[in-house]
Length: 506
View: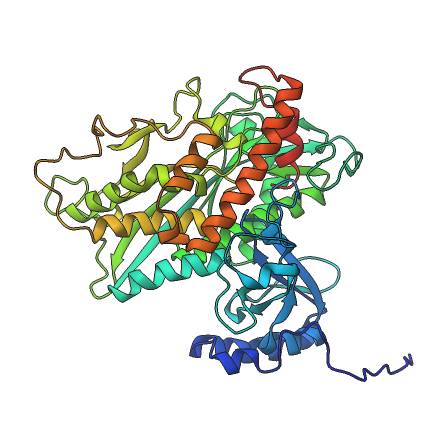
């Protein structure tokens, strides 16, 4: 077969800048070596999806030919900042044409940023059809500095603080989600637009639910979750288990412990691949906490966490002796989580819908600000003993930004670990918060946003990202409030607005 040869008279303008990685010294030795392996593998690939997680924790990407990716690998690629500017309903929340107020000059006029592939994340997707690879990227300003709005950069900064102390966080994922069957192929575009989400996917439940861990209930989801599990393992994800939860078609997926950045990357890949895998089989997967389905029980994201001393390999949370429990370091870490809980809660439960899980009618809702041994009603559940001792934070919703949720946990825990000894006159937190502190976690997005806005979130995120998150959530909450004032929804019921806003995209 003969094909015409097409030539280009000018450099590709979509490339970030020639020698961008080298000029700014962006890669360590591990990434330099990984890039060489990627270049050698590109002959076996047709397309490469270059991906990053936006502030909402959604995967945004461009699909490149393998030849185009060869130059992008070391030079980066220009990306629009749109994903930083739109709220969950694609309404413009950051005024990029006026005074955006977030302190990032390059946002003005919607100027490009540069996305640089992280070669250690490159992998070929185990799918039929065109041979397609997936690689995560890191966001940079055009001068080579990490982008102030990058979620992945936030987590990397926190992890580097641990490494400087000779410590490494270890995390385990427990994620609940809903598997439903599509009733039609309607795209839901009628009435859609900027800030106007169209019809949510029309679905039906795959079973009746409310037989917790019933083997027969799992059989109803196994035709999808079984092949999905094999698919996840082919991706290298350390899948540990699948089980049926209480709700109709509600599945919990768990993974073996990983390092912090690997955990966040895995969560982004898991959610994205799961939705795509199910959609191609006539089903719909959603990580929305409480879908508008009959008898739906809310889904949560439990983040198991401990800290290892790199020099000795010892779990810092492990108590000495036969009594078990948490060590003083473990208690200090838990204290940090509790101290910062309300100010950073928005990063763990970022949607209007996520707060329905925290309502009083849900008996196991982790609403109490405290920690307890094997108590599922507390925010922090202490699990295991000895080398396996860890803290399970139960507050997160499954659609939270994995980089920001994990960074918030690790930041708060490290603040506790490195804090000066408490004043002996001060009553300890944990089992019994002081009377001057709220006894519960925020109950609404408005309450969480207020705590975030008036608190110290900028110490974790930096002022630009804290301001950006505030604007994104103000826009989302404002649209929901305006809709509710016109519609007067029934109290306690998941609204049509929530279903349209979250069920499809998350």
